[in-house]
Length: 320
Image 1 (tube, rainbow, N blue to C red):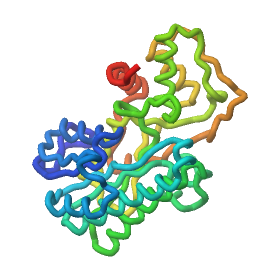
Image 2: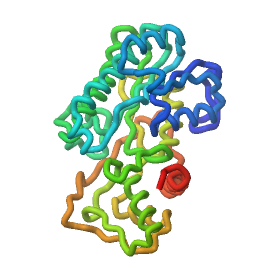
Image 3: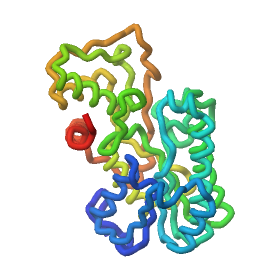
Image 4: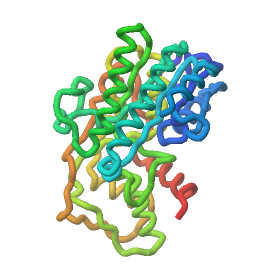
């Protein structure tokens, strides 16, 4: 048997695997990983081919295709502004996707399902680093509670089907992710892709400075999406527990350190200015990934290497 993080897999390479959400940040990375490992029978459907919010369509898909494994990476995602503007969409669309896929997968004989959530499931004032046991111990961050409640329901649905039917459904909760196919939109992207875009545009335009909100003191954790994809395959092979599993890098970086590293990787020669009149956000957000480490999985991609890879993808793929 190969060790963890190796370029091999104990799963049958011809097994039929449905990757739901294969065009997104996470799903596309999972597909890359499975192809790299030699899997030849991936089931991929775009939104136009299969609307996961339509129960009858999802049921017909599972009835005809009968996948052996399901990786549920499909979700409606967005930043604070989107969550505040479209709360009904964030709760209803995600609940529909999860309920339809999980229920149909079970009824049509899927051997194992892996559901992907997010670190936003945890209480706003969770202990740091955040252990899996912090789930449902306090109020959520109000700005994205609609999305978080849906994701919590997905975890609980997997657990309920395990209890009632003895079905092998597991959940993984990644930390802040970045990498190819990320959202680099100027208004509604996360901090890391937003910095990549801003420093790149400043470099191209010959700007003298880039202004970033806050003091730069908050601590954040980032995981390259290819590391997550590696962990997903690892868990699919080796974990069949009741409890959801945190997937993080275990490494913290201040926003200031991150901004300076992005500036360096992009090659912006101007000044980096901190607008300390603007809010900092949560002072620290770190996942406790010791459970996953105990199973034998560790991330491989350093933040610097991951940023170089991400910036290369951005330059080649994002319309300027």
